[in-house]
Image 1 (cartoon, rainbow, N blue to C red):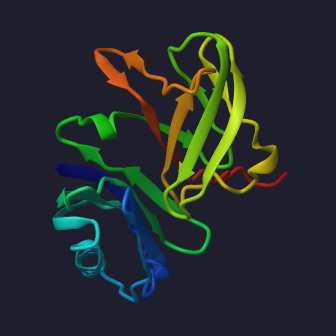
Image 2: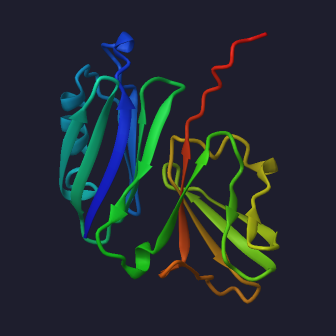
Length: 214
């Protein structure tokens, strides 16, 4: 199966060398994580391609579009058999991360996930076209492999996760898959537009408040 991903990185050259702190590619067959010591975007991407080939991808290529402020990177690859790539997170230092999900060129039953991106430092609040009722919601962190479950009462399609016992879990450093089961234990599907979904591919965008202190 062919997958693509597009992500933009700022040209913050003040941090070079060592501009790239590291990256994580999360997938159904594990997470490839590395911390290359490079100061050139092409060297960084060469390392990413080399590191994830034969682990997640059979082959992987990239293109880089450059403007005055940013690099826009497109990754295209054929995944290894039985391996579904979920997303890429690039950490440009210990506190700032940029992430994006992989999308397949053709939907398959095991990858019919609706993409949702939320601001960083928020508990997941999803709006899904499902009936009111009590559902068991599972969220898998594809970096750690942990699966978190919670019983949630859904009203008007609102699936609101209570983050009391999952503080610090939902960050831009990973990609998450959300699935639901009804009160009979059956998987839940829903339709958005003309597409049927059975899961949510959840990512978070780093958000920085630049308002000057009073």
